[in-house]
Length: 165
Image (cartoon, rainbow, N blue to C red; front, side, top):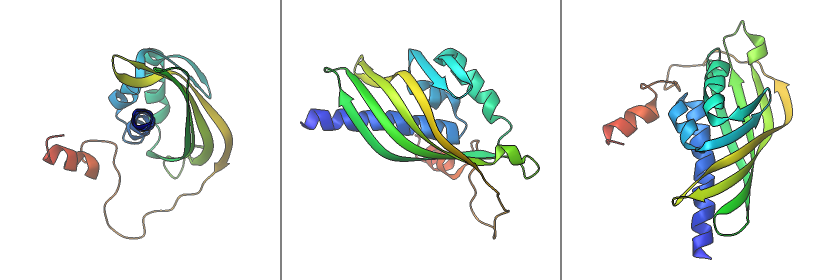
């Protein structure tokens, strides 16, 4: 059973890695979440990971930021090295104030065909299933303080670099 718990944890880490990559605009992290021959099905996209990453970069370039919250997560194993992972999430997207159409939150599920290859769990095929979307209105921060960034000056990036990670 402990091996299965380690597998579940590793699979959940793949999902978290993907979300961090999107939110920090670190497309190499996004790519790492997939096997090299991985397939993705998103709203407006179907194709290989090599096609998905540039499509995602273009989709995110007009946004100021995104934030993914991972919720319920369940894994069904199909043998030792294949699993079906379902992850509930909410993802908020925001652009500049004049770009109202870019400000929305969506409820979705990642339905992932995961495989362990060479000891590494990663996405073989993903369906990003959108359940609902609602428009959002964003306001300026109420006070000065730390803000998320999508570059090397983000507090997480600074801290990771400080410790050589």
